[in-house]
Length: 295
Image 1 (cartoon, helix red, strand yellow):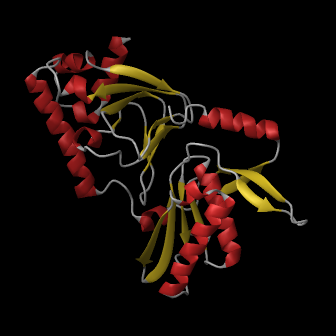
Image 2 (image 1 turned 60 degrees about the vertical axis):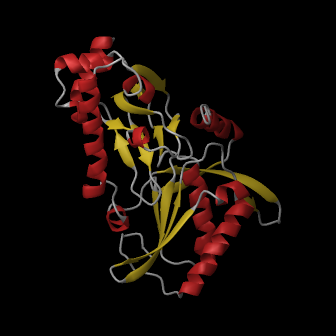
């Protein structure tokens, strides 16, 4: 098992300059943790004390106002927490059964379990990775996200009228029940940035109406998780709404034609919001998706 871990660490770009002996030394302070699909590794509110290398599986990192980033075998993440004394900057979740090689800050830097030379090399490698975020900006901006089209984490709306507002709330609930996501208002289905024919006052009113609608239809707590941005893209106004994945099931409160209130459960599949009607299917999805939430 240790040999398998060493093979994975050799694949890690950040460890490319480490010798075989140093890789083995690093492996001696590692531990492994397995995650089922839907299991949250860490969330944006948590303080970080570890960084990770993917041993196998697939995970997705959601950063507010940024394009989600995927991690696969041999890739390293979570290193900013080693130097950042505040909370994590994003939320990461396994999208399939995964196993991570975990390096705790205490084991790597705060005692004498590895040599000073290895600590120095490791610190340098992690620092260079963090600097690369500032230089290259690995997280794509809004225009690059839009160019990739709608997906299970991206939705476009042409306007901010009442009809679109209700659809947006349904989409946000579907995003929250999966991996989080982003709604762009002022973009049509073919990725064209058409902009909003609205004043700043109109946008402010729309923001308030979205917040109120989320409080009413999803719950007050979920309204606090939203992030809003007004951006100018190609000289046109675009309104952006971001939400992280939720830690508990999100139900959309709707009213039928007879005025009877009902709770609807939406999930995101591709670029569509799917309404799950059968109670057994909802229970199964919740069990699979939220089994480890908050653990």
